[in-house]
Length: 467
Image 1: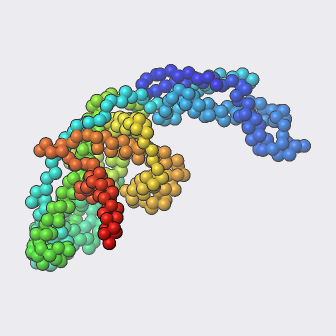
Image 2: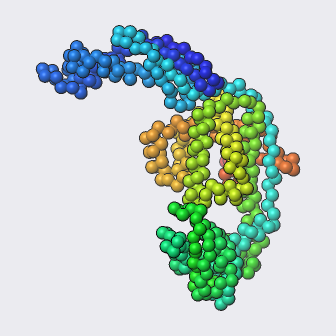
Image 3: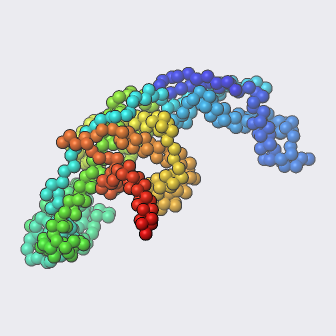
């Protein structure tokens, strides 16, 4: 077999492959055997029909087509390997020449992994925001905990913002009740949002057994964007009575004896969370610093597919949240054009980052053991809310394991970049990333841990000798 490659672009190649007829013989023999098992010919047992009889019964052309279909994928893969090409999508294959007793020729156009002149990735520099936890942040968390221990009491007064109310609600369009828009005995906190627009404004000032009608627009269903009349009736008004912020509350709500100890623990937890956010920002900043050092050619088909996938994912999330894209853009203060430009920029950076991390993983010869793969699949299953065993079975059945392995290798490559980079916060302090634990705490440097482990046997030996 001979093959030649023509570079159509940095991310697309055209293979021209020639397969001599003698190399088709194994596939031709296999085609005869396959067809022999499928046909019934008087005088011959199934599977024992000679090739000459098969040619007369079904035609030589059908056998040749079967042989070509068998050899094409194998020859294509072999041509890729010969020319050191990594495909990124399914090829466009065209048979350009094939006749009986003559060679097979075909072409294959395919998007391929671009060649990247990998820049130096040691000693990258990046900056991130400071880890800051204010007294207001701590107070907000303590108040949230306090509300969990609050009690609701009935009040005989008009509804105020923040009250808890029990309501009956029904929406009508052209006098007809909207399907799925009728509820009764529904508990709702005024001002919390998440219901129909205008509900909070209508409720404030209403009294028990009072009914009010207001006009709004639905954000989901068949009547999206159309005016509907909503009738709401208040059947109960309650306000939340919160416990006093003192040591008794700390003992009731936590394992701490004093309110100061509780606040200190809340602050530490917030700091840990901020450290994890800072670490994520550091990874993005380091990767961005590397992307700025190199131009990565991107296959447009791959970019387009990723763009479409992200749009579809966002629209699905918005639909589940009862929002439209227009409402989302309004809340984000973005125009459609700005949204599309920002999405495309992020997709292009993400695709380029994948290529770079793959290149680094290859250069550093990073592997993945079975334990790492298992832990990664369990983590992915937990993130998606799936049963781990079902997730693992699905990955193997649909041949997604190579993709998962590549994800792990990219993660290792990114970790190498970050640990070798110098990241500083807004105050100029070096950000500790190498010893950052999963819970946001800072662990001891590994060399100190190893040193302590080495000293332990020696100390034990000395104690034994002294005894």
